[in-house]
Image (cartoon, rainbow, N blue to C red):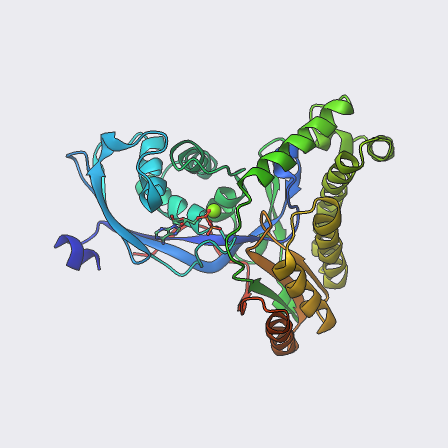
Length: 367
Ligand code: ADP
Ligand code: MG
């Protein structure tokens, strides 16, 4: 495609994965912990740097875009080109590029096609830069140029995760640690269920949840709910004593979810997938009832998985649509898939898409 579009050969070809978060949802802006894996699905870029300040971008999933390096500013360009152009801006590239993107990451399914798009270009353009610094540049591209709020989990997973491991991310310190995650070696599969829920107008919801979490921390005299969590029983009692019912439930989700991530790490270190499953389901119930960010499609996927024998299941990502995950004993995945299809159809919901996934490698050079 590069040769056809530009009549020359690319300098280099890189791939970077999408991600799915095992547990630790809606806690990053509270200084909490999350535990994503990199997916086998990835975005590939073929790229050649230029020296004349011209940027030419092509994708099998977007309109061609031609512009100049100086055209990039907050909110410009619009559309998909904002992500790669934002990366060049964040890396302070002055020369420009010709680039072609091809991706197997489902777009807009909550599996972070946007981070895969940013990270693959950042890694290809700056292979010698520290990966944590590259992730920060990609976050700036998404926040400041594409104007999309994102906490940094997606970019860290795409650039720092490794095969056979989940990546524990502590958003209060920015530190990361590898945790073994090889369910197939223990007779268990991780199934991703893309609900294909229609896009909802939920723009204000993220900001409202975030504001509630920050207000709860202030009421409790803490800089963050992470700080409250680290106070142990005393912190939990303080959250229970919050008078405002909504605020109390929002805060309870956050401190209980951070505790569940810690328990999940312990479970994974012992390869205890029954315990991990239990934690996934508890996380879903907390997100559904206390944090109120689920939706009928996600609840249906989780219910279908659990009734068909999954060890645990939960919505993953920001909520109101996107994907769910289920931990399924090997061999029972076809039943879970069948049940999720049937229940969605019965309830008049879109037919979901399914993928069994393993923890895969971060951004890497392909050729
Ligand atoms: P998610 O990251 O969960 O898939 P986002 O809304 O954050 O969803 O990002 C999706 C957007 O990212 C798309 O609308 C598009 O602008 C851009 N995008 C991601 N991957 C590609 C790609 N391969 N080609 C073109 N645009 C892409
Ligand atoms: Mg995204």
